Length: 265
Image (cartoon, rainbow, N blue to C red; front, side, top):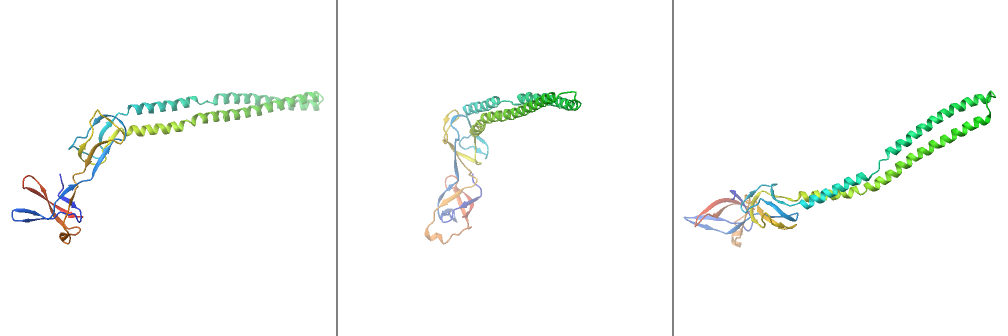
């Protein structure tokens, strides 16, 4: 249970000496270890419990599993809500492509009218056409140019409106993603991870029981490293100092002892 090296607290050290066949000691005390109470971070039914009194558990091992079915269902519901939000967004591209095709038609009309304008300018100079006919061509040109401008503005408006609508819908996505992350974190806590390597001293629950958040599950301590807390008299105080080696006797049956070495700390 104990290593040959045992640290002993200064001013409450245990000093032992041998005299003939009788074991005499200068002080008595008890061994202490750093005990950790492991508690549940999640409430629910304990599906498995892998910590029995006397068991040695390694650090990072799964000591218990708590039912997290309800949390998993909540997480799936949030993820479904995120997916539904994305389906609510509008795709502006089909409408934009339609307007762009309309601009191509209008630009083709402009090209045709500009050629007609050049032809009528020559005809007017040759007195083969009237100025009125040239004015009509220019009026048509002006009209088509305005139509192109209107269509371009429609494209800009469509992009802006749909973008605003989509941002409004997707603004709800980030809080949902945060909620999903919170639920994922809670689900991860359904596995009770043993924090330190050591021996299970006491258990407080059994598999199949329902536990609550913060409820103790078991107590564990590393018994390979212990402190011996012993008290000495004032007269003995001058005989001890930091780093001094002492002998520690541990009960090992009726009037028998095991001897270990310790250091005053």
